[in-house]
Amino acid sequence: MPLPLYTTLFGVAILSLAVLAAIAGLMLAQRWVSLELRQSHNLTIGIVYGALHVSFGVIIGFSAYLALNKYTLAQEAVVNEAGDVRAIHHLAGQFPEPQRDRIQQLAASYARAVVDEEWTLMRKGQTSPNAAALTKQLTESVDSFEPSTSAEQALYTQVLERTHSLNQNRDDRLLDVREGLPPILWAVLVALAVIIVLFTYFLGMDSTRLHVLAVAALTAGITFTIFAILTLDRPFAGELRVKPAAFELVLNDIEGDS
Image (cartoon, rainbow, N blue to C red; front, side):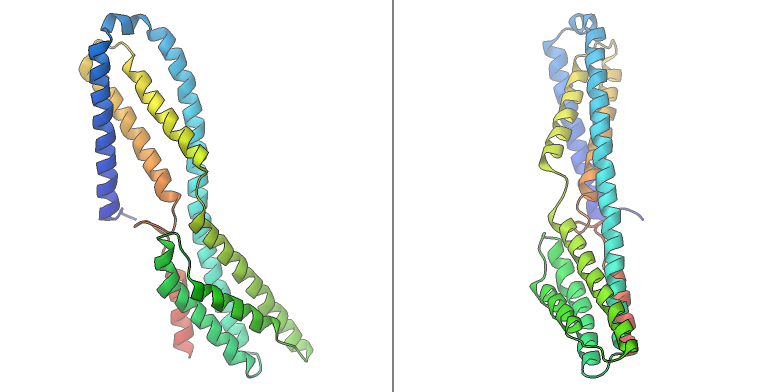
């Protein structure tokens, strides 16, 4: 899937600023610290730099794993939640009146509220009070049903399980809206990235052009990786957010059957 234009431009802008800042810092370091002094400490700096690089690699790899896993689980939670709505609506069709119409209406209204209201609010880290109220009403309507036959008891059990699953998947989705990577992890990630770039300033290289290219490439790689982690850590915000396609398909099916 190609990157949206805004995200691409924003990423390029951040990347360019980071690379320019790193190169400017390198120019200052080369002016203040002589090449001979830097070359005389290459071995020591290289040992320290290697240790920092390993630490940064572990941290950024762990952060990338957490962010990608969060994005993937957010997609799964949305698909499962929409599937629960579809199943509840379908199973409720076998309920007697008036429970049938009541549960089906609440399921359809909930899916519509999620698509029309909550998805926009989630971009701002907010949720829909209307969708929350509909979830509560749907759960109460299912809980209040009293089966009178063994067939109704089996049907009631299935709908009850799906309702509990719906609430769980909704909670998982909303947790991804509110929570991200721990701030301490971001602080360590950014601090190590800055330190690693700074350490490259004090490596003694005869070719200034080659030194600039090396620092620029390293800064670009680090910045791009952190930008990707930041984007994945916000699965319901930005242009790469998870789409409500699963809910829209469910609504099409429900409204097509009605």
